[in-house]
Length: 310
Image (tube, rainbow, N blue to C red; front, side):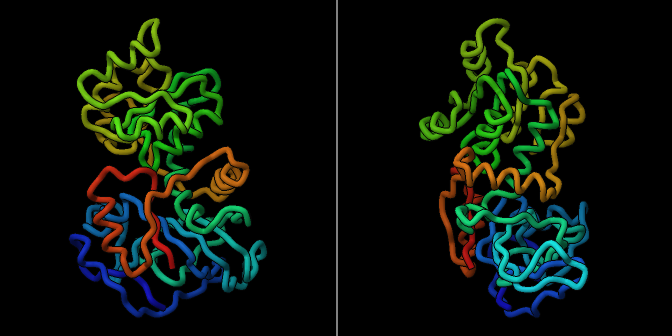
């Protein structure tokens, strides 16, 4: 099969289109023909070698933890899936090597969710990792009925989904930080936009009134936004960060690392099918242009997601 792979760690140029053996199909696995693969910030960190102290890595390494495609074959122990089924998955495994940036991927059947026919492959591939991160982080801090929730980086891959999921979970108001050029987009998602910067605390306090505090915070930005959130949240146990684990632990904040969950993935994609969750894809690239996709993502200011098509 053709796949984007790397044999050394570094900048985007270490990746190239290669001819590699088809994946093995284990007894509890499904072999999926990839139609689209989501590109996530964690992919760029893996490519640069930053996660080698966290998970085993092997080369040649095919990046990619988001996939949507069609089942080609199933292992001898698989009962729930058959060839021709359209599926999506957060495809993180226990070691990093055989990812989604290729024509084929084998996956444990427990990771796979059925893709509704009304959801296209690009949208489906953009959803799993960002959607699960958004959902699980909100659940970790109990964001729900009647809450005022502050979401940082509300126009980004995780944030734009988090805004909408918070409303689905019952939040009464969502305030989202974003650059001014994305304020109309954030409003369209159902949030009240505020700009980053030194005036953020006062701006949020003016919006919420009363004691100037919010019930829950989802930090997808880190840095100054993290520090400001410590002053804005009523209870630090109801603040979560996906970008600064050590500082989160030091300050009594919940650190979120998304776990694969097929049931939650299906819940999310059903929201998309029902028109209750919008997945913004800024740009797609053909598989062979994965280097360009990584450079775009690392350049910042991406609205929503970037996806590779196969």
